[in-house]
Amino acid sequence: MSVEAVGTARRGRGARKAVRQKRDVKMLPALRRRLPLVEPMDLDQIARIDAASMHILENVGVVFCDPIALADWTRAGAKVDGERVYLDRHLVRELISTIPETFTYHARNPANNLPFGKDHMIFVPMTGAPYLRDLDDVRRNPTLDDLANFHKLSHMLPALHSSAHHIVEPYDHPISQRHLRITYSSMKHSDKTFMGMTTSPKNAEDVMEMCAILFGEDFMETHPVVTGNCNGNSPLVWDETMLGAMRAFCPRNQPVLCSPFVLGGANTPASVAPTVAQLNAEALSALAYTQVVRKGCPAIYGHYLSTVSMKSGAPMAGTPEISLMNFMIGQMARFYGVPWRTSNTLGGAKTLTRRRVMKVQRHYKP
Image (cartoon, rainbow, N blue to C red):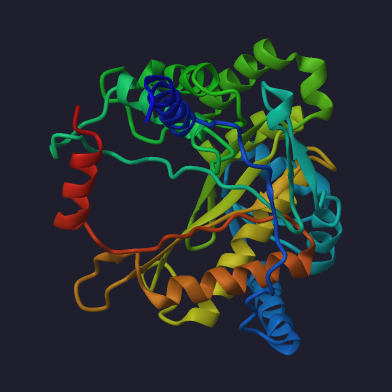
């Protein structure tokens, strides 16, 4: 082979290598479901879960530990006895019927806007990890710099549609300021949609003000730009902190996840169907309240699911009951015509396998 041919071949290999090493961080579009649904319940069973949930709302009631919410429910026509609110099924159905079945998330970069609801799905990073395990295989407290790296990774991964919020908890900043730092990191290190902190009503208001600076108050009136997550206290309690956070997001037309916090067998009955009936009642009561605050504002049927060992009382994350409940909750959300959030990659392992750790270390070795 001539010198010229060798040079051409080398340039060809170099060009191919450059193409391989070039990162493509363009976000994939929202996934549009084309696979058949997994539906463990038939129509009669869905109706039975619905009837059981409505019975709970009408006869057991839901505790709203918040004087403003109690006044709101009184004006809406619900029966209020102390802090317990009894919700008529017709009132609940009327309220949740005004929740949009679909809407579009608007990101800082319009190319990353996302349709959501019905058959459009988006993928969001997990949040709230109290520790991380670094590339030296050390388990430690995260910092704000660590959180920034996770937000950058979320931005670079094409299959993730959001930078979420506190993927890890940055312990190097005081709690009074932490929500500001977390939200700014979400905004700065990614131009995808993100989540806003709801750890107190004031913190949620601060997030709304930051979003107004970034997007404009008038724009937010008609465009969802951020998501809040409000967790209920099972069984059948919504507290002042979460309700106040809802009242920060909903008047600005920003969606919240109405997420009962279920520890199956501990704060619910010890079987799947009654647990789903209870969770469904809790979620419906919060979804309905979002429409009391602002009719027509977007809201999402959320949940946190775990089960509890009947021997030790320890929470368990990788049980088949959780997957079954996910499928059932999806059916109930579709039955009511509201968008919903689910979880995936369920597992109970505390660490990566040794083989997987070694692969990660080799991959990132300088």
